[in-house]
Image: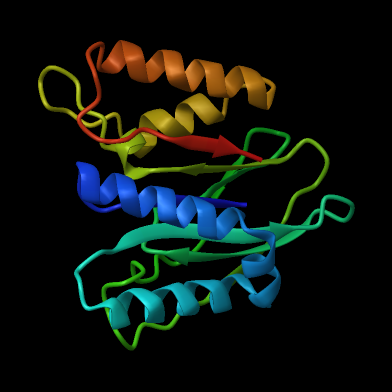
Length: 181
């Protein structure tokens, strides 16, 4: 699994997003990368050597759907939220550096475990930084309160979408993406 948030807007950011989507969805590329940290390091080196300032935040990970054991690399992306079956939330990760920003960036891997009924939420900063008419962010408190509700993951995602559209009824200023595993 992965989630990417490219810096900037417009054609250049869109083209980078398309390139990353094709790269990360290509089976051979993923097989060459032994770990999520190797993938982040490889992409960082590729973008640093390119010479143009093009960077992005990313979460890339693997999950064994049989055992529930998983690991991911967080490269400047917002902290994933592990929602336990009982509604308890755990913020995972340590932040890390965005990909393509620092030549000597190193990346760490975070291990986690999904038990039956648990879920992992990945989201872009556009979710927590979604502003209402007064300029107030949706924020982590609102996101956390929503996730603590006793609902199935599919219902929680629909509730998140509804809450964000209620918070900011017009078009969003930043990308708003979320993935629940």
